[in-house]
Amino acid sequence: MRTGVPWWRVKLVLNWLNASTPLGLAVATAGRARLSRGPRGLVLAHGFRLGVPAPAFTVGNVVVSRHEPGWWAERPRMLLHEERHSWQYVACLGLPMLPLYGLAAGWSYLRGGDPGVHNAFERLAGLEDGGYATVSRRERARLRRRGRTA
View 1 (tube, rainbow, N blue to C red):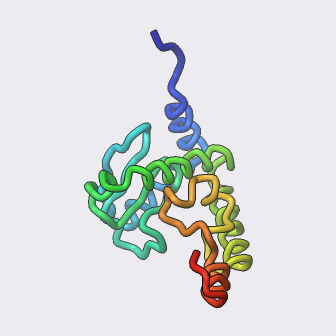
View 2: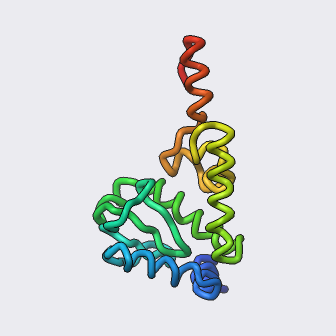
């Protein structure tokens, strides 16, 4: 017999209390997304109509995408990547995650020419699971110039 509360329920409560999930719901509403329940307390926001710089992004426990619901069934690893971001909101005490993520993306861009490869948040969420390259744009260009592939 299993006892105790599943950890995802703790995350669900903490992301409500730290205001990141309510902000995620507001963002989804502003983008006229349709909401559905996802696994382990996630809220999937489909059909987001505002500009999205990536296939999906997460705010609190809300995973936002411009795609339709079936899109996730074909990308279970990407959903796990986004779920890891929801844990990062807990670790950052909620909304501080947003400027911290921005700084990490800026650092990654300065260092490698793209916002993902050297971004600590993306690395911890799993670069490949999120569809990110594991070698920076600058390193790929350097390898091409030398006649190698990345």
